[in-house]
Amino acid sequence: MAQPAQKTAQNKPTACLALADGTVFYGHGFGATGVTTAELCFNTAMTGYQEIMTDPSYAGQVITFTFPHIGNTGVNVEDDETADPVAEGMVVKWDPTEPSNWRATDTLQNWLAARGRIAIGGIDTRRLTRAIRQQGAPHVALAHDPEGNFDIAALVAKARDFAGLVGLDLARKVTCAQSYRWDEMRWAWPEGYTRLEAPKHKVVAIDYGAKRNILRCLASVGCDVTVLPATATAEEVLSHNPDGVFLSNGPGDPAATGEYAVPMIRDVLDKTDLPVFGICLGHQMLALALGAKTVKMNHGHHGANHPVKELDTGKVEITSMNHGFAVDSQSLPEGVVETHVSLFDGSNCGIRMSGRPVWSVQHHPEASPGPQDSFYLFERFAAEMEKQTV
View 1 (cartoon, rainbow, N blue to C red):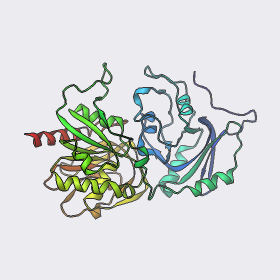
View 2 (view 1 turned 60 degrees about the vertical axis):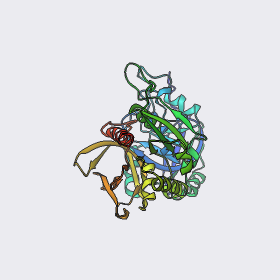
View 3 (view 1 turned 45 degrees about the vertical axis):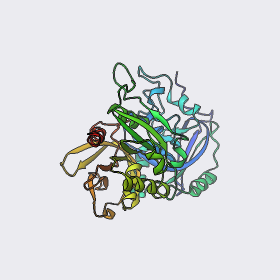
View 4 (view 1 turned 180 degrees about the horizontal axis):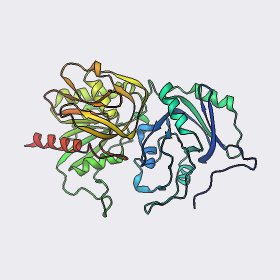
């Protein structure tokens, strides 16, 4: 049974969220106890809170969920995008209820507590989201104490002392420690996850914080995937004789990660004509390698309902997004074409090299969680590799 939110005999709040500007929100704590500091963002997805919390792109962030029914489907081991939650904590409107889903194996409360992640319920998330949209993503301190004892001045000071994500290389912290192979394909009824038995293409995937479902999507279009750490060199990449190179999603400031990632990508592009495909941080890494620049966004894009327009066809796709930095479309050099734009704010969502099978997108075509409108991009990657082998 799910445990009710903890309250003291005096009915004190058992958790609080302190912003760097001195604003404090009080609520009910669940999950782990203690204090954590991070950047605060909001996510508008109506499903997939477990996948969102375990998305490595959320390193260094606390997530405000705008959808109120967080926790109602419980958790299970199959839906983790990486081994443990990466987001620092969560903020929700309503305390989680007893899970109602046939796949659930545990409650969200227990899952967070076992993995050391703090959560707070009972918050006016609409007010908090409006503040983020108007003022930008704030630095916060999130505290959970079952006794309700909080040093507010100290928490505000912790929030103000948080260094922020600008200039911070987080990919190095969330990447794999060593290379590994991946052959698990996407979940399908009734078999669940199955293994790729007849691979057609050898792909090296650079792990800047890769989600498992991205790797599953690559396997589902016939890719035998070898995952390498974010710091891999061009020589290490090419030693696997790949048919294509994939650049994964990930957290932090792309300019900081680019200090070691950009030279590798440029070497691969200079030495080969291999297809290259990037997603999210991988999109930003490719853009930097081609001579563009990236910028910090006011509050970023985090959700599963973002309309993106493909400029060549005029087609609009509803996509999943998670990024706080963006490629500056005004900085794209000659020979690099903008392919997709956000219909929310016009920001860049895709690029390609003229005359070469090298492209990337800001949104998440693996849709975990979210719509599957953009899955064709994985099929396009496989088709480009097929051309290279003919």
